Length: 250
Ligand code: VGL
Ligand code: ZN
Image 1 (cartoon, protein in one colour):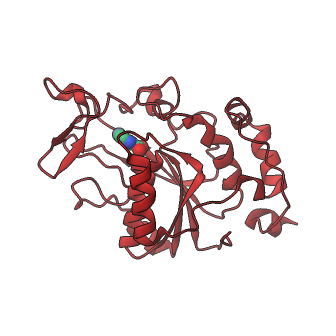
Image 2 (cartoon, protein in one colour; image 1 turned 120 degrees about the vertical axis):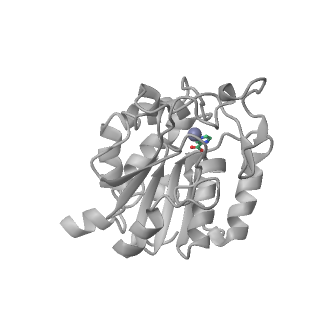
């Protein structure tokens, strides 16, 4: 398992009610990522998050295109774009960061997909593959060398983010144990292969049970514990090991 460094950024991707069971574009088991991500936050000095944030009538919504259904693929001028059910509409409850997600460690929230005509899966570059979100500049200015991405969905926003991170010169890791996939039309298998090819490498797993015991205890006391237990996420036990925050305070 890779050692967590002070120059690492944990990027929490799109943990929003619309991507959880009962939401507009539910990722199977999506809420199961909340407890492990809450626990992971304690292992990092620095945490950022993304928030999918579309205006009503967004070009990625099937409802914006006559005769189209969710999961159809059309050409939006910048290339193929999968169409989705209306989701994460700015200001709606489904677009909020999930209430069970710990908010206080998050230093930056990157909103994406707010241009009416362009979708953005990646936290770094929009789907036109040209418009930057600003996250690469933020990481460079703050001296972050590696980004570890966890959240939703593994085969779209997590995948595109880690691939772009590598392309832009950062180390990148997808925390697959703290992510879940939409997995339609083989997208999960394709994503895992593409991430490996992009040099995200074979270090894809951070095992939840290796998490620092005190961090885990804190996370499991919060609301995240409820989501975690409901989803059958095992209680995190494990050794107390190189947890950045706890080793500093002890
Ligand atoms: C996402 C589809 C549409 C994601 C966002 O967060 O992976 N997927 N918008
Ligand atoms: Zn979206």
